[in-house]
Length: 206
Image 1 (tube, rainbow, N blue to C red):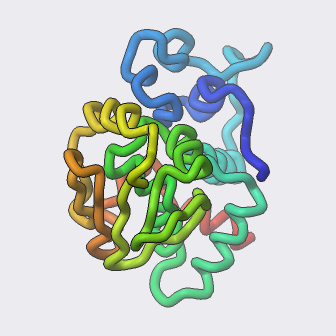
Image 2: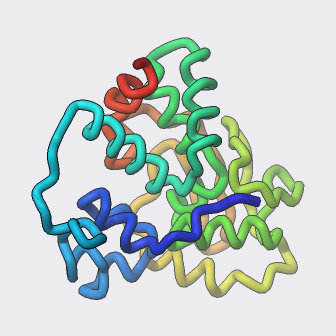
Image 3: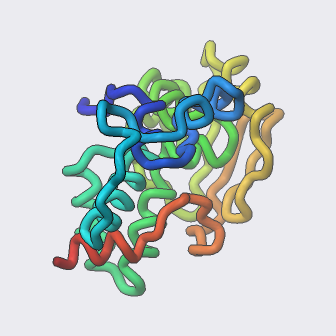
């Protein structure tokens, strides 16, 4: 399975803001953006030439890195969103938000998407009573998430819940029983991703 193995702090520095790719570390002074608030590389401190294309590209790259998705899969999500009714940009964000690994982060069951992917791939979670080990699995209204009864990762998951501020209104979580339910699809105002989706649509529309 293909995945991005590049340094995560460099990804945040390249986009010029915290993407919270390392969970708890991003909240401390060890965060790469806090220590070196400029892009990585020999020319990171140099003057960056801005253009319309550059702004659109950076927004797309930021969205990819935020959700931990490679280019080919991201383009497939965009094509799917463009075929749906409604606003393409909002459709794209809803698809990304409903990924299994992202929902575990939103529920507070994982400190980062990379940790969520590992927990899913190792078979610690079940959806509607069936074990699902696909991080990109799309959850639907009414789906019930529960930890596998024989899972050895319950303490790791409980530690992650302590970092959670508030669960989005479109999800319902029981942090004691480690279960959750998808109530509905999220509205745009409920999606906390630091992304301007219209710029992504403009990029792909060229």
